[in-house]
Length: 299
Image (cartoon, rainbow, N blue to C red; front, side):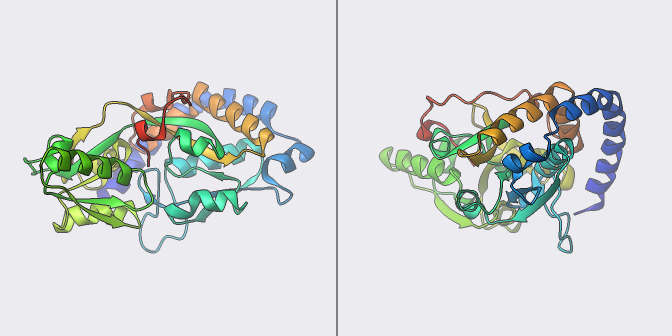
């Protein structure tokens, strides 16, 4: 991670500390009221008293490793879950997991929650519960000097890098079908295990575009200023959610109460500012379960 990001983050952190100071008196009171007792705690996080979060730390600024020597992820989602654990009075453990293995790991009971830049879809909510916490948008990202791509149809004949296991692939496959039906050349899709790998393909010139979230582009403007641009933003916002199993109703209630408290007392906005994300994103949408998976693109 380059020095400009560290310097900017240091400045922002100082501002956020001041912003939070006024809200923490309210936060602490709310946290005390919401803190579960010993019996309730086991219902939330199991007998070990540890809140475990499976996370694919390759999606900055939501979750990532600051450099190749780091052994602990940082980012918006990490701060979010750490704050939840602090309010509940429990230890938090973040378990590195490949994106394609996140939901299977949750289903198998290897973690209590997933807060890893995954947003809400009707398909996922058939199997899991989720607590919304941040609004975001799907975007096409290109190098800043690219003048050929300004809309999805401009990807005809282009090479697009995409993270495997995401619904971005479904979006692009549907676009390829539209291109073929229109008699246009299809895209060449390259799949990579991590979103950082997909971005790297733009840097080295092996791809013309990638599809990701506006949150990542916000990070890139700090980490690699002027190198990339949003060529196109899909019009409908999506919402990130903290996923958990459906057989944990007490956990659902506690997550809803705590996340809404963090929104209302300004803590979520402070975390967003730390990571250069728009604070209006914390005014998250409740998910419309009537939306179909096909109509709801998702990471």
